[in-house]
Length: 139
Length: 115
Image (cartoon, rainbow over all chains, first blue to last red; front, top):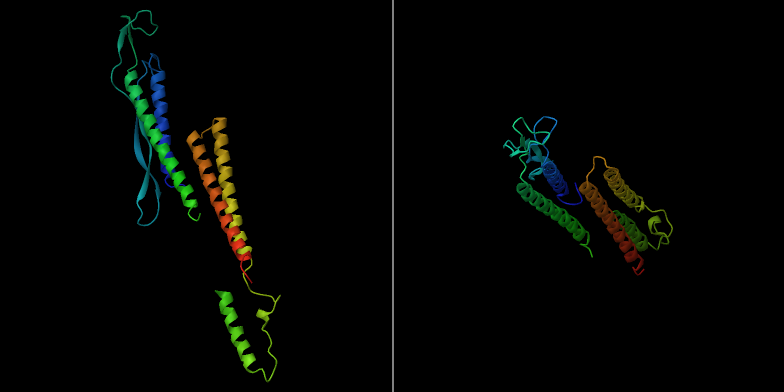
């Protein structure tokens, strides 16, 4: 029973993409972090989405599915090992394990997330324009 | 609907009175006299509907305000939720204005009606 059609679903998608951007920001920010509370270097975080039943619009109508965060998991791939004996986190051989963050991957993910966010913004804008045009029926 | 059907029976009784004018002078039924109490619907029903509409619009605006405040203060809300809530409030307000325009149009149409 929304004035703007599909806005709740779009809002859930915007929320999901925003969280994805947050995770990418976290990956980029921690690209050089060699120490974490759990020990060891930072692990790249991966996000995955799942559908969520938002509303059953009525009898015979299709159920509408929004999107929500399914999980945020760590990338298990090993990080780069660099010889740097001066580093405080270097092991006894002077090797430092860097995070497994690849900036090129993160930038591609960033662009994808931004474009997905923009696509959902277009849906929201379109819904608003549809409502405006509907209000002008009698004019 | 009801004014037409209620007018029907006084008219037939009026015709009956005119037909029997020899016996007694015709008497207008109460419902046809100027200033007579009528059972026409008052404006209260529409006013109530409009009142509810204004209440809904106001609650939407209050909600949008609260979400925006939350975003600004840095709470749980998010930017897009705030903007979407404002858009919803804006559309609700436009709908209310549209209803009001229709009401004024109907009123002016009635005022232009030749008597």
